[in-house]
Image (cartoon, rainbow, N blue to C red; front, side):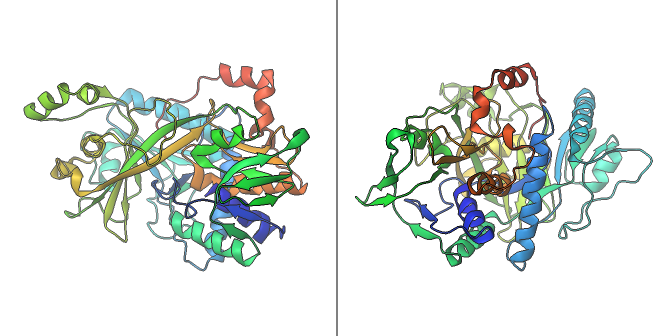
Length: 439
């Protein structure tokens, strides 16, 4: 998605010529079509850079939705984080106040001076920003009657929701092609940069392309791509997987938001299941306490549930196709049942769904890399972690500004690759303790 967005912004929005998109696969099929298609402007500090960056990206996404004539469907149902722990709700409130102060929008508390307004499930225009902290179990139960009855409160992030990311990517690809972008089904195997200046690339087909500029937009393969330039970027990858399961029992309304369980969980297993898991060293961790963060949302057209949760975030080298834990789908259902008890009806039915996923490519502080590399003519748009489809627009917009000599936004230095050479930046990020909430 980042590479397609870069081609679209350069050629279609800024009329840059001579853009060639090289991909050995069908564009968008490596990782970009395997997520939950969510977006949000709700990001912690330090500083307001991520909030400003993502607000810009959502502005551009909304413009794309309007320009596409409705072919890219977007909602603003929000992200709803739930807990049954009063102390955790208080911590969520404190963290939300900090993020609101960074510019993500006002924090409204309920009960409070203003009433809570549920999200419109279809229309996104005119919806409020910021977030609503609901410290009223009764209001939670009336608004989302399918969640656990012992939920004590919720945080509803409002400039958030999900959209048809495949449709958005295909629309950008079509517009880019109309603007003159050449799409090559091939693979770059070497970058020629004698004397520290890009002169061209060599392809797996044996062809070579002359080029004064090369943009690395390789998703989780970015570390390998950077090594073609002799660069070791501060990157690592995590494997994330989701389950798509037909909601045959219609347990979750089609108008539901993105729901996130903010409490640690212990999965429910039968005695026979426990014995089988205990006998497998790789599966035994599923018997103990596991971290918070399972996400659930409906996919309307196919009446599916999309569930995602990463309980093993150990860095690993990307391998394609990725090998997922065979118990992952079942673990997702059982974790989500803590939040939506009716999902117990789907216990032992994970095999009826599809588990897929991909790798998050991340910097240590989990912020993108966008801008010039220390080889003349080399650029990067990557390390988009789990926010690639929502952040690709601001990333591509920023990349185009760098490449075309346009004015840069004030957040540009926060995402430039050169930041990692600045001791003051490392000190600032290292001193920050961050937010422990699950997003």
